[in-house]
Length: 389
Image (cartoon, helix red, strand yellow):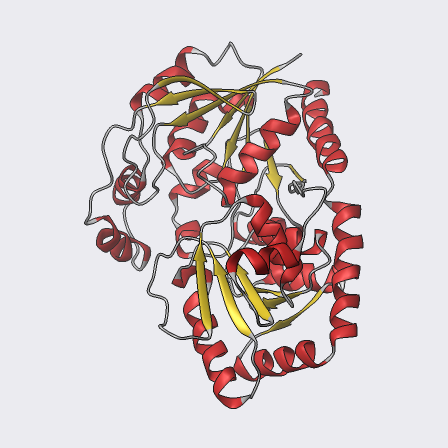
């Protein structure tokens, strides 16, 4: 059994989205084939990188974890500095300083990679954006794979990332659209495979149970994820409240997730905060459809989760990944402005049979392309190709 280290900036049951969740789910499934260690920091909060776990060994869901202290918490002035760097041309030293401050920077983690680079057969680094990958991957580059989880955002255009993307022996893409974008951005991009992630869907979900538990009596649309301007939530709130003023419907908007911005005080918007995985799938089952307003995704696990529950999706068509998922699956509609948002919303609310058909088509697509048997075999084939080179 080969020995594989998964390297990620934070890891824990509290982290329920993004590259960290993709890392955890992939590690748990690939542990059937590989001897896996997670190498990560003691941080939970990506805004501060404060050590909250104790350094040392840990185990979650049967997976071995080694946690390393962060050298220091993120400076409160980082966001201001970041705005300057991302909106101007900079020297390499300025960009490197940006990456060190971006964090999480862990000298003990980097030392461990140096000491143990012969101990592991391969290292898989999740997400290009953080210091754990940027400074860690070059130490073990001859054995390193990277899952960049990249999209078109200001940071990807920093010149220091030309160096990073040239170093792993293989890149694992989440989607065709991510690969296409990265091939445009980096002219001599390394070889790679489009793999993505499977979905951990419970055997049973019950929308009625969710409505009883949270005392929801009206039809509702659902948003799941970090409530943040970067996820398109401000535009979603503006569009939805404008739609409600123009249309006499009783449908509410239910939000599941941690707020990173103010939520409008309106009886039309219900914020339930963080809920359990079972409650999340029950909510998907209860909702008329999921709204995905994000501008930036490399895949979208929550869209796939919606499809697995036969829930249709209304997505931001300016995100090419979401648009592509809707088109390939026939599992949802997409919009690029308020007029299209309003038309799609009215159409899906007024045509329940068609909405259900969209959800069913999404389920067929998701089960054909994102079940774990397929994902596991793609990872095994990717490593096997390296072994035969």
